[in-house]
Length: 383
Ligand SMILES: Cc1cc2nc3c(=O)[nH]c(=O)nc-3n(C[C@H](O)[C@H](O)[C@H](O)COP(=O)(O)O)c2cc1C
Image (cartoon, rainbow, N blue to C red):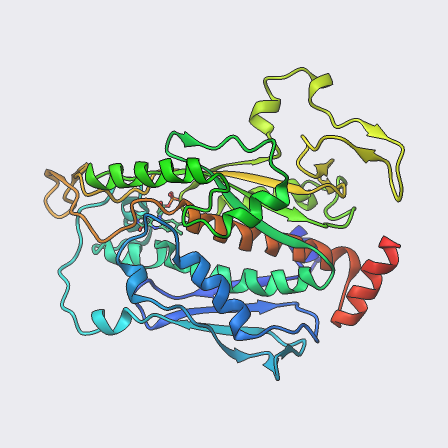
């Protein structure tokens, strides 16, 4: 048999897979390709899980769940051992649903996977689609992202995020240093570094809730201390910007991704966009970062900036027009318990996905069966 070259066999050093339904017994994640010797505790992961559960505008589900991870494999005495790492996050809500008789859902909700999923898998009960399509799955991704963050932290890379807009309420943050934006966002329930704008965001969420409506917004993920040279310009599928865009776009309800202020750049002449170089040590320096830390698909040593646009939550108290698939008749959606706004939570998932891609690209460039070896190689190159 001739060997078929599949690009992803080469580029993926790290792999992860999740399984689990929203109201099933729990979520499972398996991570493969981690070096041995990475120190990580359940408390490091639980902290990230609790950040994902928070945020102003969330629904009643978050008062039921207290997400906590359990390691099932690949972890001994607080450390990875080079074997696949398996994690479980039990769903507390499972107890409330396991014995319930639920009539089939037949009214697809616009903006959800319901209709396309039911046609694709030949399912008559839309709940079977919703159970897996639900963003509950992102809890497992946040657990995986916490592991990726621990790996990155070992080589001095830090990941953070902040919310820039909720609905039409937008913060103007260009004058605030990035590290300050991320630090202040950590103490805000809308993850917005500007407290005055945060207050208006909360008011806007209250207004949407009272109107039976929902909201989306913008969040930014920031990666600081990323070594030069992650990704590649040599092959389309190894470009770091492309990999980040795919990973962040895979978050439910994220419909736009940009690296740096890309859409703003598109309206400006080149002389006002490209980050000019000046002599400096250990490498030439720049006064601006409009490229968002990536040139030619390769990290250039500047902070990596990924901005994402989240659509409004598709479940609204105000009914939307739909069709009952059982009868073919026009009808309207039936409200299911839901968030009004989940942009702050999505930002945490964004951090996880960015951390994942950077950890993969880091291992691809520096290799590592052991954490010590990886750290040594990264530091050798930094000196
Ligand atoms: C953290 C997070 C929480 C979400 N919570 C809800 C929710 O409570 N209700 C809802 O209808 N959609 C919610 N969504 C969005 C839906 O999961 C998503 O819009 C839907 O699965 C369809 O996928 P798509 O928007 O990517 O096409 C959430 C998304 C994220 C990232």
